[in-house]
Length: 420
Image 1 (cartoon, helix red, strand yellow):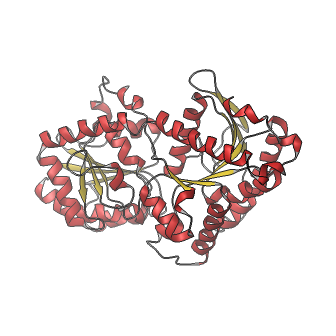
Image 2: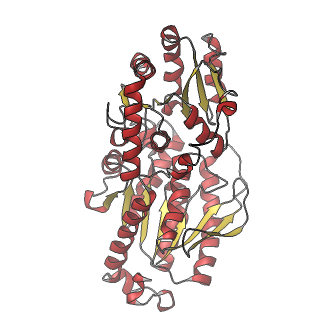
Image 3: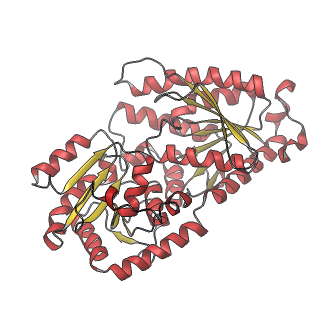
């Protein structure tokens, strides 16, 4: 099966959950025999073209396009004009390597190119919605840019043959905000690769740990984008009460974001500068090691479509404390695989952290349960197989449609080509 995929994030450009999802999904699909031709912006370098081997005999063909040059403050124009370049490259790829079975688009950032290629080649398009702008605004669209993004998100879900969401929570958002029919939506949870954490099990990490905390200090770890919606402010506000009950602790906040300096200053203003370590950017290797040396991983999100970071903590066997919100409620089972606390509530978060630190036996038991859940349920092969099932459904429906009958003959595949 041959699929053209469009995504705004792919290594070395990887920011949040969308980037993690595409990075893991693409090789998992290729390992199952899907030919992936990925077109993505070349925002943080990388070769203009690379063919990346995967498990088995497959490979991923990646085409990176230099982004458009626009005012750095005009993000919508950056996305739209970069899409013109993505569209040009995608057409070139399709004409040189086609025909293709379908197009898979990840989020609004590449919707402009995806819809245009769909119309030009009369191909079915699958769209994965990773988050919504209205959701980030907790139901509101405060400004011209959020309203513009919301409109493109609606348009993408309308144009898509099927819409993939990572959680029931996201499915409900898509239905409410865009009036997408329930029978047009497929729910496929994200996954996590446990092998990268298992490879660290026998390593001595004491020296690495000492870079972040003293030997007697417990590490309370957060990783993700440093923005309001991820609950970093709530974490800082909970810290004084945590420290009062457990003085020997260190808060390690890993990641970048537009509010990094703001939250650093907030910690300083509260007299917590020595208790907080805001690392800024860290490599994937450093992030994985931090999971392994942490005593508790905390994700106090205000808005969370899914929560891959929680899965990573579970895969690393570190006890997790998460806000009872969004997709996190579908990842963590309270008191069985983690602790859930009230969202946007520093007192509740304090309780969850202290309960974990003060009850090591319970915490370890939850972590073991969480690890097994990840192994059984949230693995990327399962995600890939479920995604392929959506591809097959879409293509079979497409073959029986008038849309396929009007497709130019030079872009058509044999009817029985789906098995290839």
